[in-house]
Length: 168
Image (cartoon, rainbow, N blue to C red; front, top):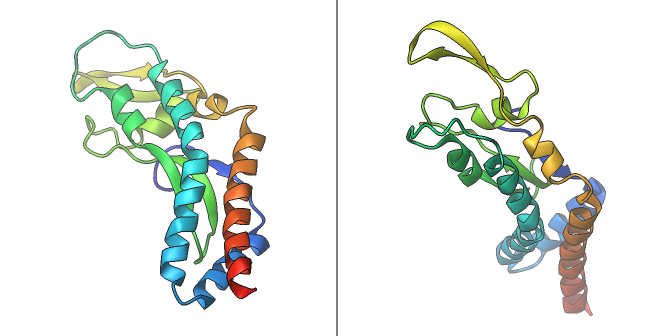
């Protein structure tokens, strides 16, 4: 997955979102309307991001006081991502790469997968296999996808109603 951890995507009809973005561009203050639409969609996905953050924070720790802390560094990089227009339009919760965290840029992705990751012990041999909390990202939002999809659709509908009211 490009850019970091596993995404949680809310599938919104691209035709509807693309049509809404075109209508926003046609308005005189289209840039401001796009910002407000993105903000509304981001707000709709914030509870999903909180669930994913609690999923990684629930991962067990060896109790060593290494800095920077892996779990909290991953949690800080989880946030909703909204793109309007371009190659990809949509809304998703994404765990971005954790650069500068102990040389472990792919930490969200590696801690989520079942087979874990390999690393050197204190920078020297031997290599060890380590496992995180399997599927912490995927299972965090399981069962709530319909609620988040509906919230994103509602944000889109509100913006569409706002633009339609201007035309009338």
